[in-house]
Length: 100
Image 1 (cartoon, rainbow, N blue to C red):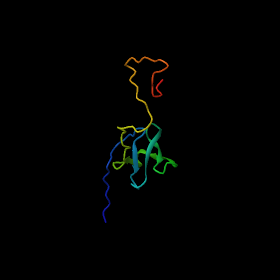
Image 2: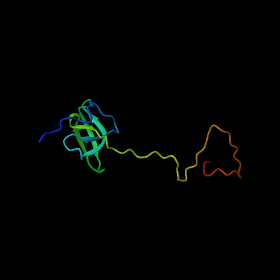
Image 3: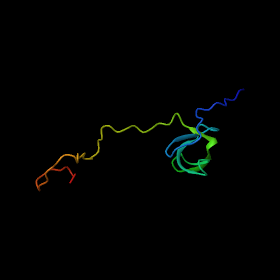
Image 4: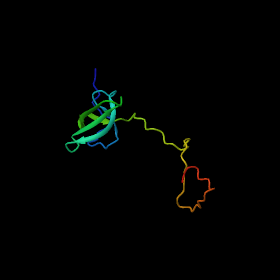
Protein backbone atom coordinates (compact mmCIF):
# COMPACT_ATOMS: atom_id res chain seq x y z
CA UNK A 1 0.00 0.00 0.00
CA UNK A 2 1.42 3.38 -0.97
CA UNK A 3 0.46 6.71 0.51
CA UNK A 4 -0.02 9.63 -1.83
CA UNK A 5 1.99 12.46 -0.28
CA UNK A 6 1.40 14.90 -3.11
CA UNK A 7 -0.93 17.79 -2.47
CA UNK A 8 -3.24 19.70 -4.76
CA UNK A 9 -2.13 22.96 -3.14
CA UNK A 10 1.23 24.14 -1.88
CA UNK A 11 -0.05 27.53 -0.72
CA UNK A 12 1.50 29.21 2.29
CA UNK A 13 -1.26 31.76 2.85
CA UNK A 14 -5.03 31.81 2.46
CA UNK A 15 -7.38 34.77 2.02
CA UNK A 16 -10.72 35.44 3.68
CA UNK A 17 -13.44 33.61 1.79
CA UNK A 18 -11.16 30.93 0.32
CA UNK A 19 -12.68 27.45 0.22
CA UNK A 20 -10.33 24.97 1.88
CA UNK A 21 -10.18 21.36 2.95
CA UNK A 22 -8.18 19.33 5.44
CA UNK A 23 -5.11 17.54 4.08
CA UNK A 24 -5.70 14.63 6.48
CA UNK A 25 -9.39 14.29 5.65
CA UNK A 26 -10.35 15.80 2.26
CA UNK A 27 -14.04 15.33 3.13
CA UNK A 28 -13.68 18.00 5.84
CA UNK A 29 -14.20 21.29 4.00
CA UNK A 30 -14.97 24.87 4.89
CA UNK A 31 -14.33 28.54 4.26
CA UNK A 32 -11.68 30.84 5.77
CA UNK A 33 -13.30 33.44 8.02
CA UNK A 34 -10.42 34.47 10.27
CA UNK A 35 -6.68 34.45 10.79
CA UNK A 36 -4.24 34.82 13.69
CA UNK A 37 -0.49 34.65 14.37
CA UNK A 38 0.41 36.21 11.00
CA UNK A 39 -1.18 33.43 8.96
CA UNK A 40 0.00 30.54 11.11
CA UNK A 41 -3.59 29.62 12.01
CA UNK A 42 -6.86 30.13 10.16
CA UNK A 43 -10.42 30.14 11.47
CA UNK A 44 -12.58 27.92 9.28
CA UNK A 45 -16.38 27.76 9.12
CA UNK A 46 -17.03 24.14 8.28
CA UNK A 47 -19.36 23.15 5.46
CA UNK A 48 -22.12 22.31 7.94
CA UNK A 49 -22.47 26.06 8.48
CA UNK A 50 -22.59 25.87 12.27
CA UNK A 51 -19.14 24.74 13.36
CA UNK A 52 -16.06 26.96 13.53
CA UNK A 53 -12.55 25.59 14.19
CA UNK A 54 -8.93 26.77 13.99
CA UNK A 55 -6.53 25.03 11.61
CA UNK A 56 -2.80 25.51 11.17
CA UNK A 57 -1.91 26.54 7.64
CA UNK A 58 0.05 23.34 7.09
CA UNK A 59 -3.08 21.26 7.80
CA UNK A 60 -5.13 22.73 4.96
CA UNK A 61 -5.19 23.27 1.21
CA UNK A 62 -7.43 25.03 -1.26
CA UNK A 63 -10.47 22.96 -2.19
CA UNK A 64 -10.43 22.41 -5.97
CA UNK A 65 -13.93 20.92 -5.84
CA UNK A 66 -15.58 23.90 -4.12
CA UNK A 67 -18.57 25.09 -6.07
CA UNK A 68 -18.98 28.81 -6.32
CA UNK A 69 -22.54 30.05 -6.43
CA UNK A 70 -23.65 30.86 -9.97
CA UNK A 71 -23.70 34.50 -10.98
CA UNK A 72 -27.13 36.01 -11.41
CA UNK A 73 -27.58 37.30 -14.91
CA UNK A 74 -31.33 37.54 -15.03
CA UNK A 75 -32.72 38.82 -11.76
CA UNK A 76 -36.30 37.60 -11.29
CA UNK A 77 -36.90 39.64 -8.12
CA UNK A 78 -38.75 42.91 -7.75
CA UNK A 79 -35.53 44.96 -7.96
CA UNK A 80 -35.90 48.07 -10.12
CA UNK A 81 -32.69 48.92 -11.96
CA UNK A 82 -32.22 52.68 -12.16
CA UNK A 83 -29.62 54.48 -14.24
CA UNK A 84 -28.72 57.54 -12.18
CA UNK A 85 -26.68 59.01 -15.04
CA UNK A 86 -29.86 59.84 -16.97
CA UNK A 87 -32.11 62.71 -16.06
CA UNK A 88 -35.62 61.75 -15.03
CA UNK A 89 -38.41 64.18 -14.35
CA UNK A 90 -40.45 63.42 -11.28
CA UNK A 91 -44.02 64.63 -11.05
CA UNK A 92 -46.93 63.31 -9.00
CA UNK A 93 -48.15 61.23 -11.96
CA UNK A 94 -44.70 59.78 -12.87
CA UNK A 95 -44.49 55.97 -12.68
CA UNK A 96 -41.21 55.20 -10.90
CA UNK A 97 -41.66 51.51 -10.18
CA UNK A 98 -40.73 52.07 -6.56
CA UNK A 99 -37.41 53.75 -7.39
CA UNK A 100 -38.36 57.13 -5.95
